[in-house]
Amino acid sequence: MRFGLFGTGPWAHLAHAPGLAAHGDVEFAGVWGRDEAKAGALAGEYGAKAYGDADALISEVDAVAIALPPSVQAPLALRAARAGKHLLLDKPVAFEPAVADEIAAAVADRSLASVVFFTRRFMPELQQFITGAIETGGWVEARIDHVGTIYDEGNPFGASPWRRESGGLWDVGPHAVALVLPVLGPVTEVAAMTAPRDMTHLLMRHASGAVSKITLSVDVPPAAAREEALFAGEAGVRTVPAVGWAPVAAYGHALDQLIESAAGELRPAMDIQFGAEVTAILAAAEEAARTGRTVAVTR
Image 1: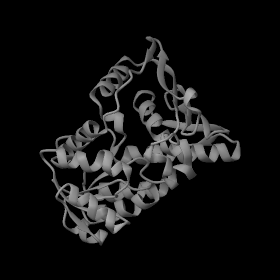
Image 2 (image 1 turned 120 degrees about the horizontal axis):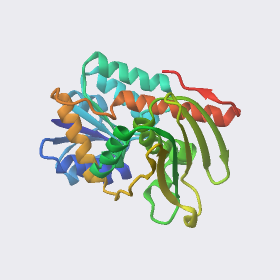
Image 3 (image 1 turned 120 degrees about the vertical axis):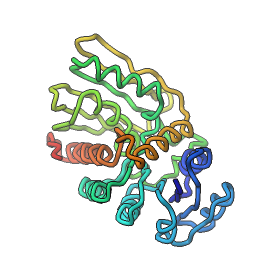
Image 4 (image 1 turned 135 degrees about the horizontal axis):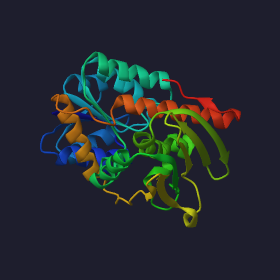
């Protein structure tokens, strides 16, 4: 599958570009970025072609991989889908549910393949846990703390303007929501409260009757950082296993799913429809935190 990469920032360097270059069923054809010099440098590193025009790159590939802020990713994804290209997107796919739904509709109308890269969710160890939890059933609650800092020395994401503006809710929130959704099912309503140091506390009611509690931040003191998750129910308490940080390996699994989906062999669990569902939940949480009301999630 011939891919074009859109984006030249840290995540393009850490995951997308090396993941595309390492995959045996991918031709890494070109790079477009908002900074042409950076696009040229990244393309040159992998023997790809740098493009100064996004639509020119879209026209010459089978699929696009996008490593850009959500507000930049969304219109590019829509243009690529309308041009008949498969999509490998980053989370969140957009900030506005209507925009995410528009991309999903374009993908569905053209029978395209799509995958949203929720990083660790593509690691086999975590997928095995989720599959087992779904088969077990009977869960009444989940608790997830995804709390850390991106502002420590040497962290490349601390300089990201969209992360600084949108905080942990939109940066690490997608990972937490993507973990509970397949086990507890669709979310029907959300309550939320914010606190200093970018803390966001979510309470989500699921259609199954279960409730999940999620704590998020990307700006806590290092000593307060933690990633913990558990499900509780009839089978007792199950702690989600810690999974190592291996973005290139995870990206390879995401590419596998996209290629299999394009061949009609698989429907990825984390496709654009799933990504749009996550966007709707996070937008409801943002509204709930702003207004102090419980907000219904309608899809």
